[in-house]
Amino acid sequence: MLRKLSFTLGAVAVLMGAGLWLSWPSSMTTEAEFTLPFAATAQTDDSEPSEVEIVNMVQGDENAPITVVEYASLTCPHCASFHKEVYKDLKTNYIDSGKIRFEFREVYFDKYGIWASMIARCTGPDRYFGVIDLMMSTQSTWARAGDDLAIISELRKIGRLTGLQDDQLQSCLQDADKLRALVAWYKENATRDGIRSTPTFLIDGEVYKNMNYDDFAAVLDEKLAEK
Picture 1 (tube, one colour):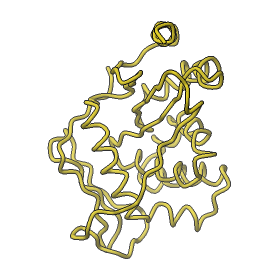
Picture 2 (picture 1 turned 45 degrees about the vertical axis):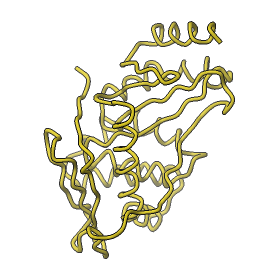
Picture 3 (picture 1 turned 90 degrees about the vertical axis):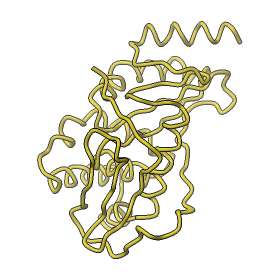
Picture 4 (picture 1 turned 180 degrees about the vertical axis):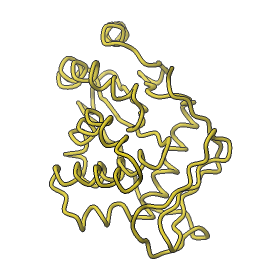
């Protein structure tokens, strides 16, 4: 089964003095409320909305005739399978060839997914997709490492492999404004596009569920022929 989610417009991210907490929408099946395994310093639950700009992570020709948006969670096994079994060929045959513009949007099911997202984004747009590939290919290792400390340790290892130093990782993971902005960005995107499971794709604005490569290629070829 695909991993399901539901949400309202009530998602907010707040920092507490003892650590970083994330209060998910009350309508979700499981409320994900948590602390990071290191201290934070500010309390922002009553602060004004953050003005942090969230960069859209895009591959391919900006002027490509087709735009594909993937909604995925970094802790979703079906998303990891898609990246292992479909994405590689999709990149070779459609993204790198200039046929499609591909955008990746994170969905946050849990605290581990948002930690991973913050680290990936900290590496910058040029390295982001390589980090996503690494996180997806090693998901069964880092996402199931054990308790919070074990998982954050594995994510730090991935961050170091990309060239991030410990102080950079610490700064990224404690960025309360970025966390709050990411949650608001995810909520706005998913609400607008009616996202209820991952992976889900928008192909020229039309919603599609998870597909194998042949089916995905058939959809793309049909739309390209219409262009």
